[in-house]
Length: 430
Image 1 (cartoon, helix red, strand yellow):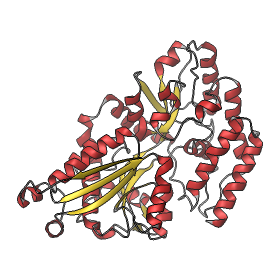
Image 2 (cartoon, helix red, strand yellow):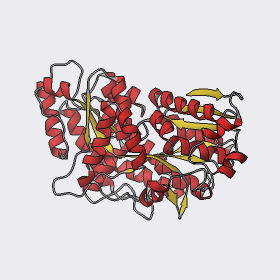
Image 3 (spheres, one colour):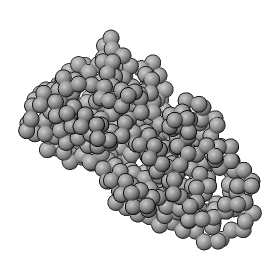
Image 4 (cartoon, one colour):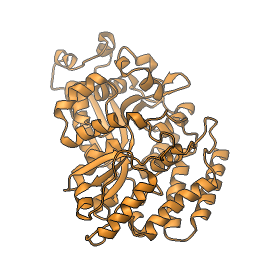
């Protein structure tokens, strides 16, 4: 866990401070020149660098405002946030995930943002689809930081050296396994495998299910798959391990849901799986030039991929500075200055105007992400039902059981049955 304290004393006059507040209603801006807020987000070092730079810019334009920022990895984030909320010490400004938004909103842990629309939040041009994707029961609970899709990230040079054809847009699941086997056959790099083990990746599992007309969850909040489905999923990756196509279980177990710990970054795999907004972080961590394509498809199957709000910025229901927090949300997602500093780390901006504004500043890897989102359009399906309460816990269960299967403590069929049984129990008590 890393914390950063960022404070700005009065260095500029009120006139300059007001000039640095784009998109704000004047009466609100005059009433809220300063204040202190706490902010929390998950992510790696690159996200921290970008976010802190944006906070610096915001507080420089708002010298009477101070922001105490804290960030950590995904695995620790939700436990810490839940503890703070339960203890009545929730941060003002919360990075929120679609999976958890419904749970936090329906428990009144985050506040509706509708009152700020048109004043602190000037995001009407995001479009109704993006606004709806951040809404619960007709109320807006988050500012969409960007859209993303699940993707395959790979080192094309490593694939070329192995004499194998790399994954491409439209590669089928069977085709992916065949390509990874070809990599294993021609690979000359020691302790390097074609791909990471994706069996614990909830996002990849969801894409696989959707191609077959299944889902992680139904609209009613029950499981959208059965033990046989989960067993086949674990079986797919068991065969990949047996073929020497994916990293062994002990290598995959080192992955802690952060780019820094990914097999691709550690040099153990030529291919990995990530949300598209993470691509630049992966690229910065490796010397090889990386490529990114959509997840595998099922020949004759249904679209598995969808565009989702990569993350949202929400405000705690107990915040004493909600208007200041709303102004900072607007700065980060709708002001070109803030958006440029965040880049694409949290997704492709929802606003077309902001996309055009930041495009000249994007790196080659950034442009690849925008191109990916555009190329996936023919394969995009509808946004899935909102994850029910307990979905985050089920994600952790999948990771654990995938490791048990990987270490051969249980068979794929046993792992599939255990996942369904534990997930059903979690949903029942949630």
